[in-house]
Length: 150
Image (cartoon, rainbow, N blue to C red; front, side, top):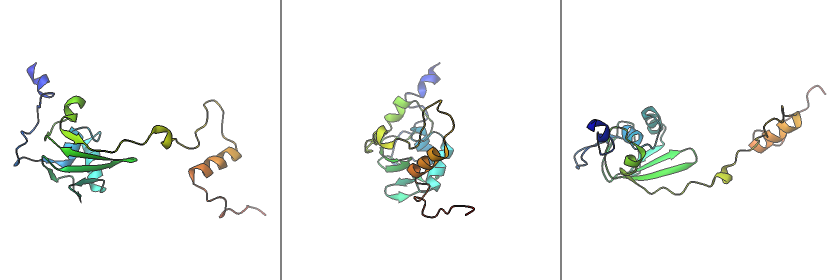
């Protein structure tokens, strides 16, 4: 049963000497910045991951002391690598592997979705649909719209 405790106490963790390194896609997955390793690789390929100010490939080696910037949804995560791990660990252990210098996330009410309807109100009318599209910015105020059939 001791092997179950190894994960939380550094099982799969590199010792952190200057000569050791871990792939960036594996590290951001291990410390729970992304949900899957393939999402980490996709983020690297898409230019959403920067290490020390440079865009990196998924195979880039990360070392202790590196600054990792990860753009996700509407925010940017900025972390400094404290410890290298190659296996995914629990959230409390993962937080100990980096220093989080990220700005606070935007308040939830500032990112309120436009055009949500109350449950049970039925299908939107044509007028409701046009208002929702106007709120979402899909229509440009009807400038390009021409009435059909007249």
